[in-house]
Amino acid sequence: MSAKKAKEQPVEKSIPILKLSHGEARLFFLKGTSYCNFDLPPYFVFDATLGKVSNLLLGKDLKSFCKPNTSPRDFDDLNHTLFHNKDGKFAWRPLQLIHPALYVSLVHAITEKAAWKAICDRFKDFGKNKRIVCASLPVRSETAQSDRAEQIFHWWEDLEQRSIEMSLEYEHLAHTDITDCYSSIYTHSIVWAIHGLVEAKKKANRTNSSFIGNVIDLHLQDMSYGQTNGIPQGSVLMDFIAEIVLGYADTLITTEIKAAKILDYQILRYRDDYRIFVNNPAQGSEIVKIISQVLIGLGLKLSSAKTKFTNSVIKESIKSDKMDWIKGRAFDRNLQKHLLWIHDFGLTHPNSGSLMRALSAFHRRIENIKGPLKNAVPMIAILVDIAFQNPKIYPLAGAILSKLLTLLEDPRQKPKLFAKIRKRFKRVPNTGHLQIWLQRISRTFDESLTYEEPLCKVVSGKNASIWNSSWINSAQLKAALQPKKILDQKVMKEKKPVISPNEVELFDPYST
Image 1: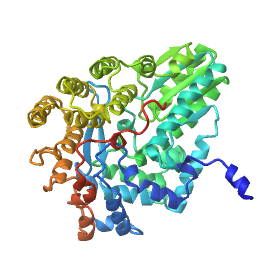
Image 2 (image 1 turned 60 degrees about the vertical axis):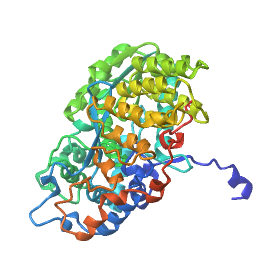
Image 3 (image 1 turned 45 degrees about the horizontal axis):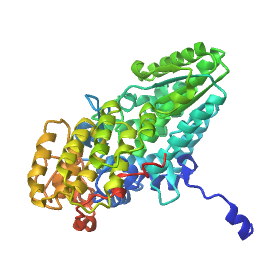
Image 4 (image 1 turned 90 degrees about the horizontal axis):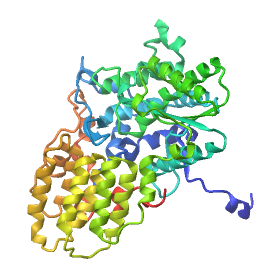
């Protein structure tokens, strides 16, 4: 190929995970950002721990590291859990830092050459029906952009933009999703998904260790006190395993739709979110019914509250929070009025992606202000109330708070004001994630402040248990799992008082 032609080749921004070799997939899953795909301050780095554990476990069975007559599933506190609010009210989603020994062992198992081929081949079966498109398989970024940012870009391009395009072909849209998907997944269904229900249920195959589905199932039970319902959330690996079950569901849905003799339809699925496009609304209702029945057979169920039918395809293709965000982007020049607009937006669209986008825009707006600001304290009060009612935005709120605290007219106010903020948040349950970000701010001006969250104790240099490793008999493996090794000491020493947008934002707030 000539140099000129080589230059004309488009540069791939990301590679779908199923196009990776088994070795590349292993390296991808063992990245710290794949292990933990939710926001933590940059001094939390898991790559070294995962790498050391991987070297110790390579070519070995995890059982050889266990104490006699002991199994990880004998313990209910193996993983470290942080709770994340889903709706700004009472629905809490547990985000878990899976015990690294179990995580690495599972990564090794699924990325063995034969196992990875079996899984990839199965996904080819899942994708045979071009009328059901999955837009949520993980991707590996090939640019400076993070894997997570590329994944979200694919959501925008493959789901939102394609949904709008569907209005050229279809008049009606049904929109629905699965209730508590990850916490409801039946781990045995993973075996059915990869190996087929008939083969999986044969007595001889139920404990067949050559079935990668059985290996995954057993690892998931080990992570969850022996339970067969639910998989941990918070990692790309678990997103991928969820896709195995949901891809299998797609094939079952295909069979039932064919039996119903429905030919004119298109389904776009992003994880547990389904968009069904039809020209006959009765057929749309029938497809939703089929999806519901198939999912029930897998231990999953649709959310009746979130199931909608409309003949306005474009309007329903764009989330209502994003539409309102687009309408309200002409912000007031006054910073406090801008923040009050965001406060009001948060009441209408709690915990939404567009609320985060609105706060990101505000964050960028104040980034280079030198101050002091006369109304910094009232703005802090507004921000705290936004975070109080929208726990999803804790990292971003922490970043804005860190900046506003540097804009106080009287810097001596900072300790007393910060004490009031901490007291306000004590009324909120499950604030471990928030405490991590409050500590990120406070350690720059008062390292004596204490927090109950174990990860905060590790940052403070105190002894804290992150993962229960009492079942392990290997001194080397236990040493590799010491909590202090998940901290980047160089970043820790920098102690930047203001959290930059790069720490908490994936995109320019106006980019999508």
